[in-house]
Length: 341
Image 1 (cartoon, rainbow, N blue to C red):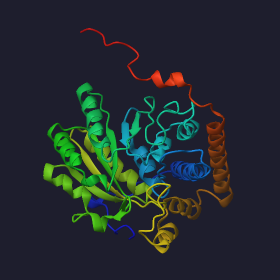
Image 2: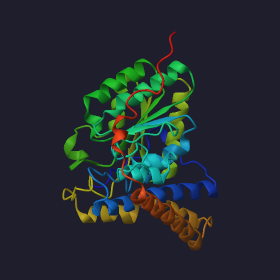
Image 3: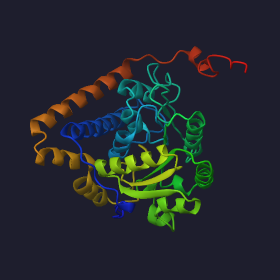
Image 4: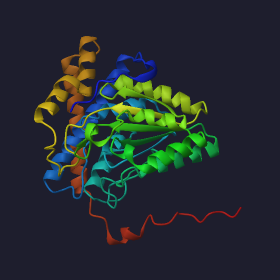
C-alpha cells in the first residue's frame, strides 16, 4: 500500500534554499541511488556476500536531515545503512570495499554491510539487530549532554523497529534525562514483508512519544526540503536543551527488504506508481529545471560525474586485497589504557 498521505504536524514549512543547495541535494541523492544500484549489481555477481539492504527510494530522508546537522553531530542507524554513510561524507570507495569484504573497507573487511563505522564522520554503525541502535543513540546523546558540547544525535530506525519494547524504554530514559536525541522513524511502509496496516493498530508512530512528553511530528520523506525543515526544527529543539524529538519520516523503498526478498507482498503497480509520482530525486530534478536553476545538460553532467565516482568505488572494491588473517586480532581493544584519575 502506498504511504498514507499525512501532512507534517505542527505546520513545518518548506525552507527557502539557493540553487546551489538544491543542486547539492540532487547530487547527494543521486549518489546514493547510483551507489545502491551498483551494490545490487555486485551482489548479483557474487562479489557481496551475506545480507544487502538497499536504500533506493529513501534518499531524501538522510540527505534532508544531514542538511540540518552540524559538524560533530552523531548518527546511528539500522542495517539499511549505505545511504547514511554516503550522506554524512564517508568515502564511497571505503563503503563499497567494506561491502565486498576487502581490506580497504571502513571496517577493514570485517564488518560488511551491517557493521561499518567511521569515528571521523561520527557514524556509529549500522546495526543488524532490530532496534538495537535506538538505546545506543540515546547513549551517544547522553555522552554529549554530559560533556556539554551542544551536539545532537540522530538515531534512525524503521516502522518495524518502532514496535520493539526497547524503543519505549529508550523514550522514557531520553525524556527523563532531557537527552539531545532525534529519533528518526524511517517509515517505508513495510517491516520486512508486512505492511504497517497489518502490523500495528496505531500507525502514527510519532504520536507514541506523547506518553513520555516527547514532542514530534510526521513529515513527507519524499520531499528533501520538507525533511530539511523538520530536521532543523528538531535540531533547534534539542540544542535548546528541551530533550528528545521524534520525526516520523514517511518514505518508501523500491526494492525488497533485502536483495534476497522478491517482494511478492505488494504489487508491481504500487511500486511503479511511487516511482512515477513520488520519486524524491525526480521531484528535485523538476524543481531545478522549471526554476531555471539547471539545464538538462547540467543534470546529465552531474549524472555522469556520479556514475564515474560509483564505478571507481566498484573497481576499488574489486582490486582491494582480502584482509590478512592477522586482521582478526585488530580493533578489539582500545589503543591506549585509560589514564588513572
